Amino acid sequence: MNKEKQTILLVDDENDILEFLSYNLTKNGYQVHTATNGLDGIIMAKKIKPDLIILDVMMPQMDGIETCEKMREADDIGSPIIVFLTARSEEYSQIAGLDVGADDYITKPIKPKLFVSKVKSLLRRTDKNANGSDIKIITVDQDLKIDKERYLVVFKNKEYYFPRKELELLILLTSAMNKVFTRDEIFSKIWESDVIVGDRTIDVHIRKIREKIGNAYIETIKGVGYKFVTPHKQ
Image (cartoon, rainbow, N blue to C red; front, side, top):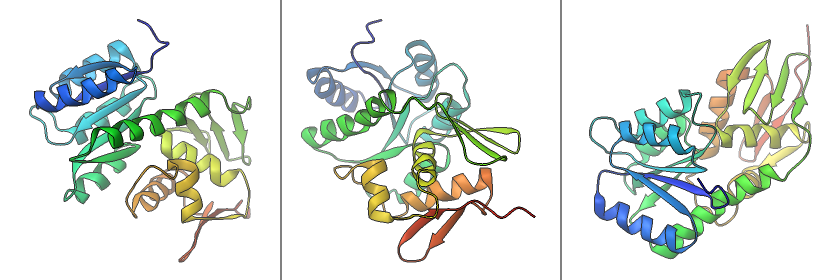
């Protein structure tokens, strides 16, 4: 397979949507694969190891939420960006998607230019990560280490898999101890200014991080944002 082109997997049970999205992505130079249900999507993802997976929420056999969860649990897919296609009224689906490891969501209907722009923005994050700092493991303290290459966080000798956005958010917060990162700053650095995400997106990601490493590291600055601190040892 030609990996010079970034690879995208589209999973949707509506053929007209697959054709519409495939056409616009292929025209912009991406290598596109499709599946019409979650089970086939998982099989295809294991085969091609895509850079980006776009999942519809409502699908037969296995819905997008369960599909995403199983993709994140699989060891042979890699660490693709996973994005949901949701209707504007499906806020519950957006939150559920973030809970199972999705990085973002795209609301439909969406215009072709905006859709391609969003995809480009998401994949730029992959390029920046690939060309970023040579530091592969960040040691925060004796209890907490971040393995950037394997998308793992080791907390008290236990390994936790972190979806891409959770890891990027944790790395951002640890990059400046005790600095208060505003919500706008976090959106700009993690999701970029041209990516539209919901108001609760940051909160959901922070909650998922705290579920893995506890509440002591990340402080909420009410009405402003979040900061990372090193807990005092007893």
